[in-house]
Image 1 (spheres, rainbow, N blue to C red):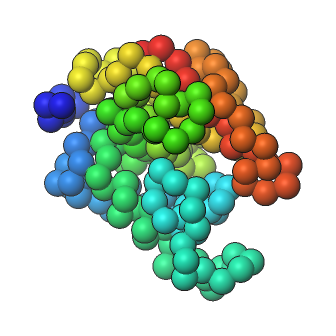
Image 2: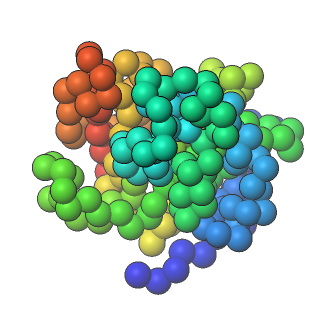
Length: 204
């Protein structure tokens, strides 16, 4: 697959104060490293399991050095390993009046050969992270990020886009359904009693 070239700053998709920029892996993300780290640190414990407890941005495996149950002391370094893995992904970053408001991380050419229902899809564009800072929620930033992803040309965007969240994350599920995602795979109690992992997909 040919490397994906980052387009220039995308035009605002919500109002004139919102800008969406595509950051390529590595040096592209590093140019806005403080902004990406800030968003992940703020939303860390809102995720199930917390970002700081995970080995990377794709798997659900917990870090082997963590004590159980999870405690603030066991996660004092923040989502370091998650952040390091996200630097190998593409990141859409939203800024309002020049300040970071949210991020969307994705892999443009992802294939999961292990999970039934996903392996048959072939390569997809996989959304790994979508997060908006609390003071910018319910203002269209998450929708703007998702819309910007949909506007990317090939090879940045595969014919199918997939995303994963958890069953009690109703805000995210509502956003994805509004954006045309449908249920693809449901793993009961995957994240704890009564908390399932939900995979969704849509056509690009």
